Amino acid sequence: MTDPIVETKAPIQITASALKQLRRIRDEQNVGEEYGLRVGVKGGGCSGFTYILGFDTQKDKDQVFALEGMKVFLEKSHGIYLIGMEIDWHEGLNNRGFVFNNPNATESCGCGTSFNA
Image 1 (spheres, rainbow, N blue to C red):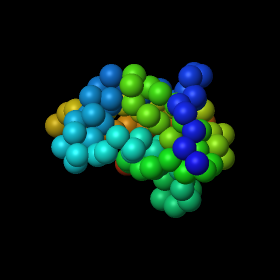
Image 2 (image 1 turned 45 degrees about the vertical axis):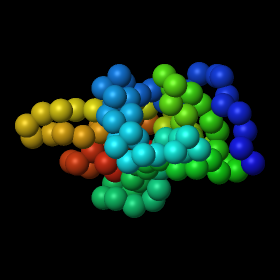
Image 3 (image 1 turned 120 degrees about the horizontal axis):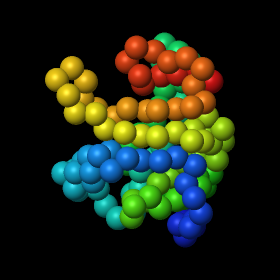
Image 4 (image 1 turned 135 degrees about the vertical axis):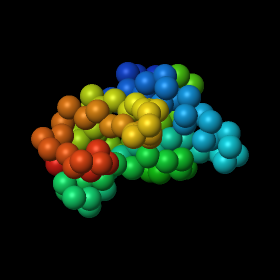
């Protein structure tokens, strides 16, 4: 079931600041080596789709990538919505958290966690 990491260019990018926060979360929560970062979408949210971002085990439908040493799982069918997306981390007084810069989104909500494509 578990395929080796694909050494091709990942369809998404994660900024250095987002990787730093993801590694911090992984370490603080003692996430095991068998887990990777799941990036995806699901129906819902005020604009139609909501982003999925969290640590998970590999599933049969996943493509597996390595981004700066982090395993990333992306379900193949989600790629059409996420190709070219950048995940960033913002640290500010009014806005702190992960930000999804998605060129496929035709509209997004005010909170930035849901979109329409």
